[in-house]
Length: 321
Ligand SMILES: [Zn+2]
Image (tube, rainbow, N blue to C red; front, side):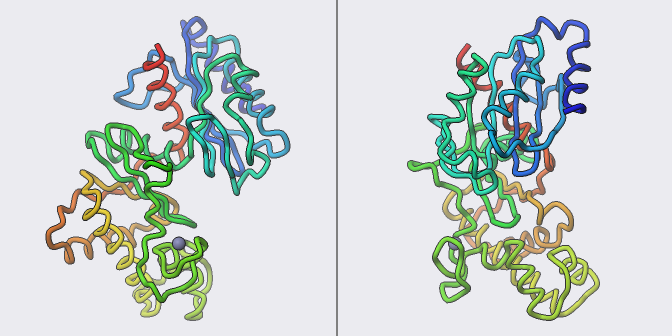
């Protein structure tokens, strides 16, 4: 808490900050909470200069109380106008309820929004972390300037979010964008969703690790990409297959959604860009009627989610105001 406290303290000492209404965004992860504090009258056309920015350990045992304490510490004596939190898991954004969070099981079923509204006395919104990262990338990151962006996150799983005019299109039941479960090979490996051969079973980090181990490789995806870069035959076959699967999913996306831009981020896309580069080549080679938009790497990295919470807070504050 020392770093957190000093961060908030520094912000408070800036001239003129004290009387300014602020919004706070908390990106709650499995191992840490990132915070961004900004003036409530910040422009939404670019990321605001934060009044406070930092991270501290995730409180696992009593998350609502701990998150309220974190918010109180950061707000200090400033007038807090709104708090937005992003949570990894399934969230009922309308009612501020965490349905299920694999990373923070203590939050399962908790009405976090209303708990924090009671504790802090300000409006609180709870949103999905992937949605938060997607709106930030679409508005302030690689998708800035494009009205209709599909944001893909490649990691353990494959997450997707279609962002139009800065808002995630969640679908009638809140489950749109599950690109990781597009079927690539109906006879392929069993997927966590209960079906077979989904994109995730070929390109997710565990799938790449398994494929690499089966041919005698050591280490995870990074070692695989390193071997690919050095021309290893087995690694090349795995990376090509994964990129090909991603390309098929992107072509499906273009056929169904026709986005104005595709932003690709997440752990697998961040370090080596082999997968994305190769996939983009396949997409352009295989496209027929498809209108293939720019395919670009995400730019906000690990702070995309926190930026998304602040952007959401600013936007909802304007609507409410
Ligand atoms: Zn699946």
